[in-house]
Image 1 (spheres, each protein chain N blue to C red):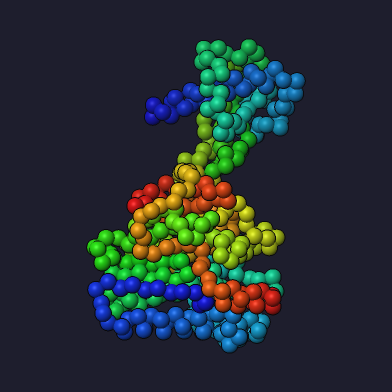
Image 2: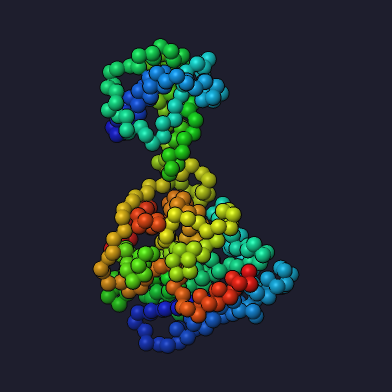
Length: 238
Length: 163
């Protein structure tokens, strides 16, 4: 997926779960990559929607459609050239599936992280919840908040690294403004990631959208380093 | 409950104050512009939707001083327009009896944590604010917007060039 993936499993020296997981991520990349000419996604886009879809692709496209509806149109994978790019959902979806694979292997203390999006499960090797820092959008070497998670997912959408890269379909194709980073804690990484993406496209209203979602908390940093966060967020702060 | 009573009291004071102020101003909004069809009696008064500024006027007028021209208000119940209070909408109704405000009700107010997920609903999430500060604690991993290698940036740029 063009990004680093890290997995930590507590209490195992077995290499097999790692191999299985990275095999899964490679498979997802081959299918959904918007950069690989031979990915199923690219073939589908070239076929102008006529190619037969795998069940995984059908599932992802259906989830994208559902997310678009829930977010009032802010989450939209349609590009101005008519092609689809479900990347805003695939990463969280894939991490979530990877975590399910580990659980099905009987593992219960681990995290799976890809490109800053994280699914936690159980406890770390100190028998504590996993300790996660929220990166400072103005200084990438710094952390501005430390949270502890056990079983939840956390995702951050932001304007740094790639620039204002999240597409706002309701804003004349211009990038959202006013928000530097939005971190969302959700019941799992799939949910956290897709709603972080959608809420970030909403600009400063995004944090209110997150607060309206039961079971979600958010920490939004604006362009001058001021943070707005949901009421339940503090419960996760270390 | 006590807080709510005090809150309504403060708001009531502000309403009285603001109605008084309005009448000192040369332009008085026409009732038809402000009132909905739910007037219980013939309109002729103003209504208000003060939204977030209610606290600023709390000390501006003592509770015991009615507005000088309160008799200009005709009896009835009036519904204010919906005002955007940033985190949600505020809408009040005000009841006038004998030319005086006797009741103020919030028809919409931003204090519910809705179970719905639609952004266009009237929702008042509880939000808090702070200035970000660097933390020194050790962390096991970091969440942030996608960290990308230079190769990925180039790949992205290539893709964008095609778009």
